[in-house]
Length: 226
Image (cartoon, rainbow, N blue to C red; front, side):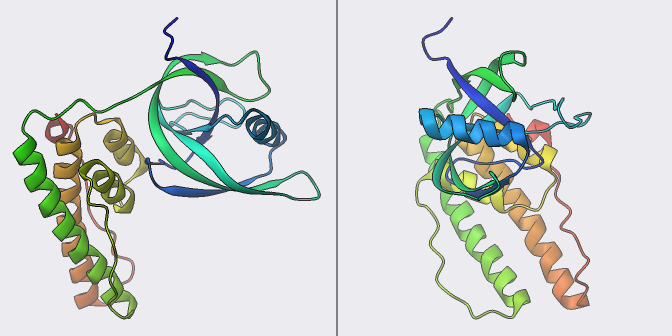
């Protein structure tokens, strides 16, 4: 096996975690209490993966790509449950599942890195546009909430910015999963810009109609992620 493989526990959830994003967790199932205890004892990360359609409790089907989640703070409750604060660090790809040797689902995984973008100038242009569009989006959301406009810092690094935007989008989990699996920063930025534009337009219509049930229509076209 490759020297880069790492054996980690998997936590299938109905959520997609992006690197750099925080994820609070309330752990109550016995198998995941054991998982948490094992991770705390061994200093291993938790592998957060999207539970795919067809998953049932105890027999979850994990997406092939997930994110390492580092436990940065925790509280163990008297009855054995845990409250965790985790932060996504890096993506991984599942190489081999391990269903028999643990109470919980585990796997051998390998880190998943981005392929360097050939056109550095294009990436810089996309990052600048994405940064501006994210600012417009956040100001629109604050205006609808009746909140005062405030300075919100967005990461300058293109990769971090692409993950932040992906986490902000109101698309379905399967669409977020597609973004998580993209290995081009430029492609993630381009998809994020398109998604922000559509969500801003939908939010502005919502504000005009004063209809809180409007959902931003955002769909990720696979052809635009290549």
